[in-house]
Image (cartoon, rainbow, N blue to C red):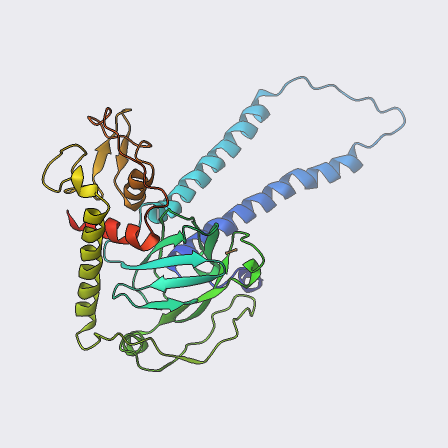
Length: 350
Ligand code: CUA
């Protein structure tokens, strides 16, 4: 019976998914229990107190004990559910662990592109190692529409929004292929906008990284849903793949930062912003992930979205002390690649 119920949900392929499921089944159990607590007496009373000749109702005005009980008991249960929900949700909210591998996810009508730390990209297939936390930086092409990256087996779903970076993370403990859906209606190809996450054991992950052919692991249950696909895969080997993988990652990161620095100079940012100190505009030294005090008294964290918004719409969040400065907005003047590079450059000035 319990197994049958369990099979109603997709396989739970992360620790977080297991925790979600426990909370989910608890909610179902509480709902069923209260349904029975209300419905069984209702049916019994319908028969027990049905109309009879000579029977007169006794009016009841008030019962303090019952009223306190039916207020207190559900309140305690609801607070319990809130606390449990918070504990499970907190891990996802607090962001990815610091040792995560960061992968960029770009949605575009109607496919998904994944970019790895060493710069290589894949389309509609995301390859990751097992038991390693993976941080996804999800966005949509700036000329495109909303999409949503949904992996039922990991219980994660995050919108891909043009011009915005959303973060999701997972740590899968089941080697296999997991289906990915687009969960936001995005046009004629929406239902076909599927991808998969291929979770590899350390040996196959190593081979894949070095561009060797690998046999793909089994599909992991989601109601028998699969994508038509090959049984083997190879990653595109990088031209500079003569160095180690760590070196390639470093080379790619450095390139991106250099590119960002060029954009910074060529688009004129350098006229008002400096790495060393505040000038016409605020300095960006140590900016990334720092707390920024705004002119209206709010405090925000300078993450990827803050940086991008401050370029595209500079008046949205004005930094304290810069109320009277005007920065021209840059919407549509920078490509997604230029934004990525600029953000990488600013991130590097820690
Ligand atoms: Cu993309 Cu629906």
